Length: 187
Ligand SMILES: [Zn+2]
Image (cartoon, rainbow, N blue to C red; front, side):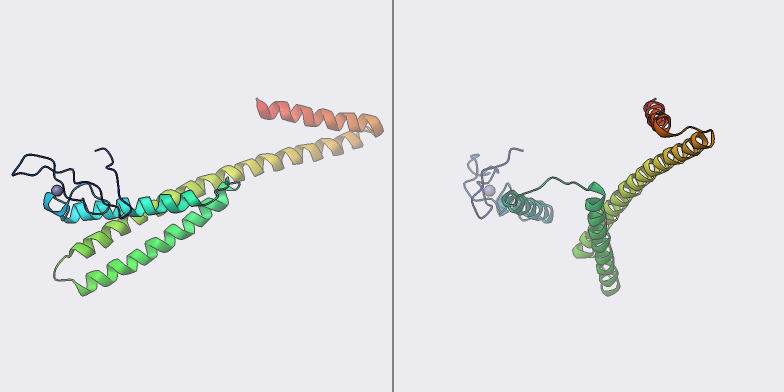
């Protein structure tokens, strides 16, 4: 569905058709929605979708005004997101627990909504934590490779000196070791 033109209050022209005349409805849509209340805008699904659209539009407007800088430390950013996701997930969990204990007799609309949000938050948490774990593992693997290279350099250095290599020859040999290690690394 094409995005209808919106007024500042989030309403646009209703996309519905008037049954009596067969012409396009002349009423305003609900804020964030595509249709008026008479053409389906009053249903829970339509209201939820409209509220989500308004929230996304508000977030876009807000972010559009900010001066966004490039992320230099993706791991630190992911850690922040992970912290936020876990906090949201924990909050929603307490909401779900409270609502289910109060309204144990009837499963209400709100309980279902909270549960849906909670499950979505759980998936978000899992996804961000998995990414973080994977990144940390990659970083650790790089650190291990570097420490191995340093061990080799130290061992070769000691062996050269024990073998009586010194001065300029030792310096040349050290540079050669560095060069050969880089060649091995890039293979
Ligand atoms: Zn209408």
